[in-house]
Length: 257
Image (cartoon, rainbow, N blue to C red; front, side, top):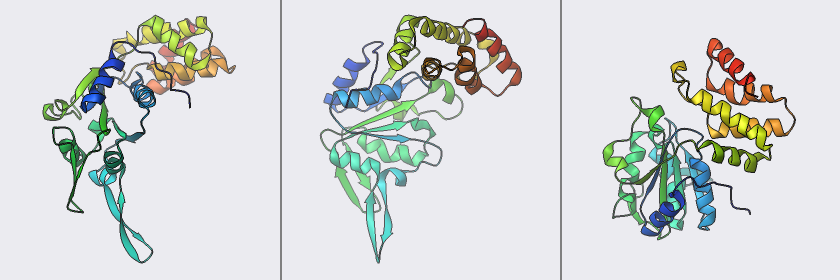
């Protein structure tokens, strides 16, 4: 299987490799769609290790991660959760948007993020020492979470952390071409639109244009969807439900592509 494409922006590959070798948990900070998940997929392939991804949300509990008893036929059996599996077998466990999970998840991983590197399963009364190749990785969107759900300093300081942001325009255009085979000119136009919208802070958008949205638009353009329509449905509409803002962004993008 081909390694997932990822264009390094700084020293993140080098830092991750050292963190992996030193058994230090890794935290990815940054806006949605800046390549955090793709980076982890890339590194898992590069290191030839299995990746288990958990998309955290407000209902994600420690039981979901650690495991539970289930009824199988006439007996009750224990079923390991993804965290327990990763700890036992030596995989990378990626907690995407960790701040969205319930507080008991943070409590459950604390003993895995310090010198102990162990997981306590209270329902079994067992403590499992992590496999030598186990690594815990988490992502967090500080801009979106600010004032809502934040990671406590006592949690953040258990991780090596790297901040992700949107790449510079030339690199972002190269990413679009590599991901979708869209023409270089169209890639540049899409990036110019994104840059313009990202600078329109007065619109009060919760999230701005991510590289992921640009990749979607480029895919649609490459397969023949009219360019302006592709930008409308893949870039503008996902950003907001405010009709006036949508129209303003459509008018802006129409002038640029």
